[in-house]
Image (cartoon, rainbow, N blue to C red; front, side, top):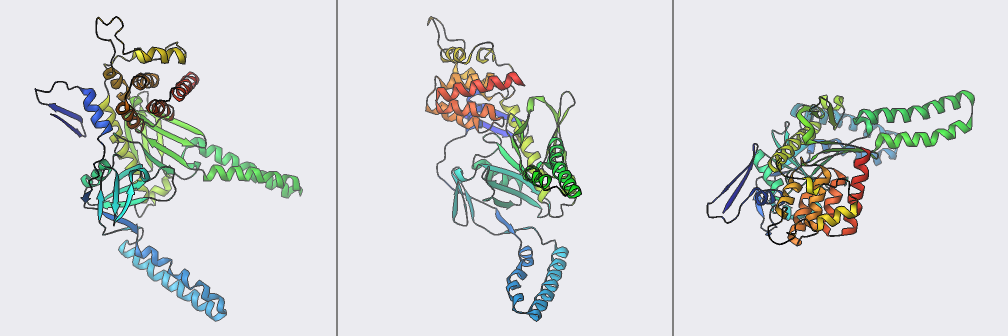
Length: 441
């Protein structure tokens, strides 16, 4: 029998002496891929997080607004009642810190395929993003379950202890070893490059409007319209942050920045994000909110997001350390000077023994080591995945698909997903794209 334990220090592996074959490769496959669902639901001690009743009470006067149209007297009465009601609710909420979210009792069950909240089932396909964060206001831990690239549909859960919160995420297979985590931040004001671009685009329409009014020129006023629309698009576009076991990806309006974890010396938590300090001293900042918003965060909304980001980065780096094997020989899987076609042909036969008089120098086991080693180069990991895919069964392809779900770098993720499908044409295209982008970097 084999026991695999994951903790903050890494992965501990133990085995009975009568095991026929046990190595790091098999253990890492267990850690990174997990097992298929048996459909068994487990009851967890958690609650739902919903908008508090005090917050909802602030909106109650909206129901009386139609009555204001009955006449001047009714309008005055509605206005006075609205002001008095709002002042009373604000005083009550400020005294009891009752605004924001509150925990309400719920029956919550979780399995590897779905989660049930008060009898309503949400499948794993509908939830592919999960984060855990300390909630300083409610004195517990917040679990956020959502669908990537979806504006609505977030499920917020609350637990008193961190172990239960992490159990929910791990049971769904959404922990750092088996998936990426995604955050979205408002507009381009959350990076220096985006800030300059946004204000630069906003300055042009303001100048056009100014000169149009100065010279009474309709042509300049019309020209300001597309410039203003461009500025608005840049201002309201979302910044996306993806954390995988390989690194952190930040995307905004077609621009992307990627920081590999093997380049990182330390991680510093910021009040509004995280700073990854590289070995050469350069800083890679991941910002989720303006510093002003973080300092005025009375109800813990920003702090919870920032804490979940920092926690996931720590978990991902721990998972990377657990899967890293720097002694692996990666060279046979690297492209080198070969074309994509030659590279694929070489990988197709890399596990063959040749003269059949001795075992092949490279096996699927060694290829898996490279695929799971996030410190390996991109083309080494993709080459090893291609070698597995070209000689694989369905089980191996399923493992490749699971590994792809942990990768933040979009180029590598696409290549691993293509390998997992067994589509050689798509794999060749992804490998060519990897080469072209690497040559420009």
